[in-house]
Structure formats: C-alpha cells, structure tokens
Image 1 (cartoon, helix red, strand yellow):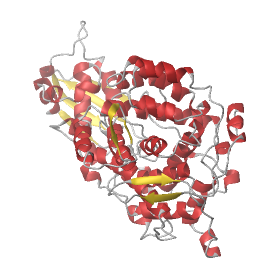
Image 2 (image 1 turned 135 degrees about the vertical axis):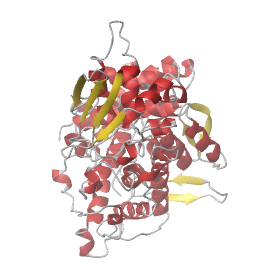
Image 3 (image 1 turned 180 degrees about the vertical axis):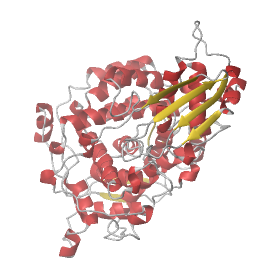
Length: 533
C-alpha cells in the first residue's frame, strides 16, 4: 500500500490499548466513557472464522493506518469537507430546528458540539443525531455507487466521540481518517452483497440500512473495540437499521441519516456493555438479508490483499441540493435552454412551449409532477427541469416556496411528460437524461446528458469543492473560521489533536482561531487509541 512519510511518522509512536469499557452513570441518559484493559476472548468455534459476519468484524478490527492509501486519504478528506459544509448549511433548516428542540430534553455530564452552535451541546449520541440530520436536511450530501450517502452517518459520530472521550491520549487526524474510512468501507461491502443495492432504491432508504452499520463500524474502530465486540456492535446495529423510501421527499427523510449515526453509536455502546446479538447476522437471509432481495454475502478478502472500495469508486458531489438523479435533468435542461433564449438571455415566453419530454429512468419517488414543498421539489424530475429552463441555474434558493409556486413554474409543470426508455436503467452509474422541448410552431429541440459535472466520471475540482464549502459554511461561520476549517481538513493526516477540528466546528471567535492555528501542527506526536485489543 502507498504510504507517505507523514503517515509513517504517525505510525511510529502508536500504543496498543487492550480494550475499552463503557460505564453508565447513575443519572438517566448520562454516559461516561472510560478506558480500561479488556482481554480478548477466544472464538467459540472454528465455524465462526468462516462466517461473513466474522470476516466483517475482522475487517473493522484489523484495518490499520498503514492500510490507508494516498488516494483514499485524498478522497475521504474531500468527503469530510463537503459533509461539514452541507451540515453547516443544514443547521438553518426547519427540520434541524425541530430535531434540536426535541433533543434538548436529553442531558448528560458528557457532551459534544452541535455544529455551528458554540453555546449548544448535547449527549454524544444526540449530537451525532442532529448533526447527521443537518448533513442530509437539504439532500446536498455526497452520493456513492451502489446508491447511498456514505458520509453523513459516519462523520457526525466521530466528531461527537472526539469530544466525549478523555483527551489523554489525544485522537489524531489519522485516527479520524481511519475510522471514517472503515465506516465507509463497511457500507460499500454490505451493498455489494446484493444486486438490488446497485440500483436506485425502491423499498429501504440505503443510509438507514448500511449507514447504521457504517456508524457502528466507525465507532467501534475509533473506540478500539475487540474483534468480538466489533461483531456484537454490528449485530446490534442490524436491529436498529432500516427506514422506508416512502418517507423520501418529506421532513422525515433527513432523520434516516441522523438516526443511522445515533443508532450505530448506541449499538457500539451496548456492545461495550456486553450486550450480544446473532453471531451470524450477515450470513442469514433472516438477518441482514431481510433488507435485500437476491442477498448473497461473501467472505471478504484478507487484510493482506485488502483494496479499499473508495480507491475503486469515487463519490459524486452535488452542485445544488436535490436528489442525485435530478442532476442529469438539470444538465440536459441547461443544454436545451440555449436553443430557447432570446438575445437578451431570457427564456422564450412559456406560452410558446407546447411540450417538455423527459426521458429518464423509472424512479417513482422522484416523479412528482406538482411538488408543493421544498422536500418534494428536491425529489422532482419535473420541477428541476422547469427551474433550470426558467432561470438558467438551480441553486439553494431554488427550492424555497416562493420559487416553487411561481405561476411560470406551474404553467411549465403542466407541460412536462416523462418517458422511461428500456435502456435507461435506475443506476447512478449508467442513467442518462434526454430532454425534448417542442414549441407551438412544431419546432423541437433535444439534448442529452450522460454525465454531469460533480459525478465521479467528471469530478468537481478541488477549487470548486472548496467554493461549495465556502458558500455553505459561510452562512453559519465567520470567514476566518471557514478558511481555518479548509486548512485543517486539507492537512488532516498531519493533525495531532482532533480537538483543533472540533473546536472550529463550534464557530469560535477570531482570537481563538488565531491561537489554535498557530499551534495546529506543532504538537509533539501523541500516542493513539486506535489499536488492537
């Protein structure tokens, strides 16, 4: 595996902890995390070594910093920066306000930051919950193939745990990167167990299923759980997983990722307390297989031959907050619009348009002819096409009620027809959008999009990714804090103390930022918690 000198230096001073224990405080909802030796128990029989469940637990337990490749580090840092940005933007939404109001009823002696709110802290599980909701509140977060949103269920868990745990020894940026990538990797491996998972979902919202397991995997790695307890955490998390796709396009959908973050962390805590689950949960059709048809789990490759899925398959980053499939529609609509503008750059009067045909995959929950809320508009092929035709761009404000309910939009929506060509399959890796606009005089213009800018085949440049982050985060943070976060994430593998990152997530004063940045990379290396048990 490729490894930089900086990473080699990080590995040299690591210490191996032999276990972790979670101690529950006497008062309700208070969890105090303390580290103490815990001997690794022998496996009960040889059959367990051959199970898929055991191989997943072994993957989580066995992956080390020196398994990380330069490509995986680079891609995961982009995912972290983007997730933080859309998370900060999401803290201004109505759904975020509602879940924070609910979460205030819980208190704990141990607490973690709610992003962008310096005076608001919650117990770690609820901080992960509300921050996860923020990340997905506008459907602006990254998307992977097979289809899921991999980062939102994992990153909030790790930032919450970074603050909740004792600060000696410190968590490093490499600790966070390793746990983050373990959480993402487990999600990808699970989705490869079923052909159904490779298509845009029809039954369960993927982050509510694999995201919950990714959260548990990341938390287990970050906390240094034994192999046995990694397995138990996964088994418990399966019973926390799953949410129906019918709640897409509602305020409840962002809760799927918030709950995945929270429930995965809870499963890990329960495993640390000794709770047990089915030791073959991923080997059974009545276990994890209950979420997927044609479920066919396979043992994972050995650690010696491990290749990260993120090395093989990058994620897509969105340029506007809506379902990923609508980005092909926007791209095609932007191309056809060039034929419909008069010299001043204004669209022809809408009454000149007779018909708009969208040839897209058959994805029912993104087929919303007349959306009447921001969440429905984000899941509407028809609305995104009309917004792009009218305005020439789709942006964050495009989904406010004033924009959705414009008379011109409503007039155009009545003219949209969907067609589903047999070769246009519901997969983010192969789908396309073709749009035809027919005028009253019979003239028809047709354009097609096979790949949009931001898709993994045409990735956002680092400059444009940082611009997206600035645009999103600056709505909640000062300019100095925004720039500081970019610098910290850009050099995350060289960061000795993750408290530098979590302090910035609160939105500190300029004076605090200056003090922290001056020492950001000057700490002597401290020993890590992430170790074998």
